[in-house]
Length: 128
Image (cartoon, rainbow, N blue to C red; front, side, top):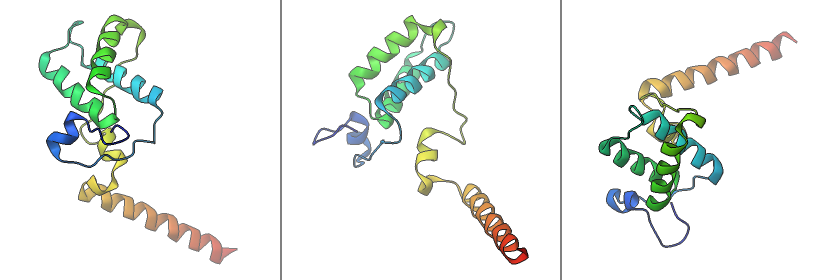
């Protein structure tokens, strides 16, 4: 998600428009990515399939492929100093930052929580 007319390889392949990833600073994005790399290491090695997956993930974070490769090398070299980061399948950065991609049960739970909160506010207001 590069500013300007340039697009990442992931955006070109998937035909997506660039979107804002302003929720994280560039340093936070790098730290998240390096933690994810360390979490994917298998006995100090990174499998080719995992490397490709991580490069696609870097595109989602707005990092270029070149920067992703540098961060992968840095994370492998300093793996003992970086805390591993794993995402569960139900809660990835993409699903948390895009409510339209939430599953139906997740939307229902969110709606239920909002309804309960509003009910509690009304009860509190009436009882005052």
